[in-house]
Every structure is written in structure tokens, then in C-alpha cells.
Amino acid sequence: MPTLKPCLTCGKPTPGRRCPVHESQRNRARDAARGSRDDRGLGWDYRHERDRLVAQAGLTNCPRCDRPITKANPITAEHGRARAHGGETITGLICQICNSSLGAQVRRSES
Image 1 (cartoon, rainbow, N blue to C red):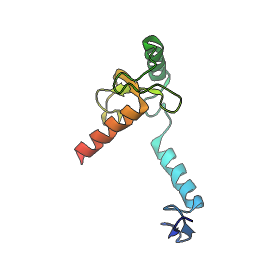
Image 2: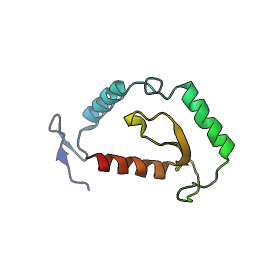
Image 3: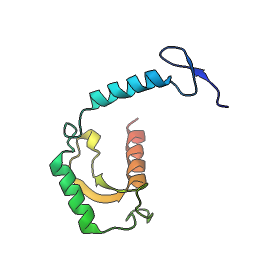
Image 4: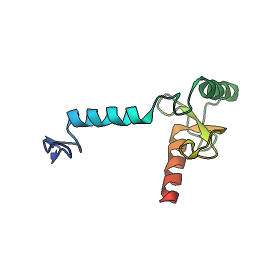
């Protein structure tokens, strides 16, 4: 049985950091502040370009790590400069695992 800890908001015992009610409220607030995908620059033009590149490449394995491309590890657009830091240009296609690890490396180097 998991250890219960007090919810960070109400103090009610919960297995996570927040009880389900407050976790849901927090997620809704975060999503509202984040904006829609169009607000974040992921509108039709961006998605169309990404989809065109994916179809053109016809990849079955990631060019960076050679892992197979699957629903659990889909192909994603790589940006030379992180989108969070103003990068807009798609520089290549890599699997989601590689893209996430590159993002984590950027965040660690900025700390």
C-alpha cells in the first residue's frame, strides 16, 4: 500500500502530492495559462509542415538512436533552438524519447 502524504493544498491524505480534486484544479489552471496549440505557435501551418516532413522521410527508426518509431515513441520535430526559447524552425525529425532527452539537457545546462 502506498504511503499517504498530506495534499499540498488541503492537507487531506493522498498518495500523490495533491488530492485528486486539487490536482485537477491545478492541471486546468496550468492548461489555461499555457494557451491553445495555436497560441503556442503549433497552428495549421506548423502541423502541416511537420506532417509533410514525416511523410517525406518515411522513417521506421529514429535517425539519432535507431529505436523503432511506434505509437508509444512517435516521430517528433526537432528544433535547433528549443521552442520554449524562441526556436521556430524544424531542423529534423527524431523520436519522442530523443527529443525529450535533448530538452532535458537544455534545461539542465541553463540551471
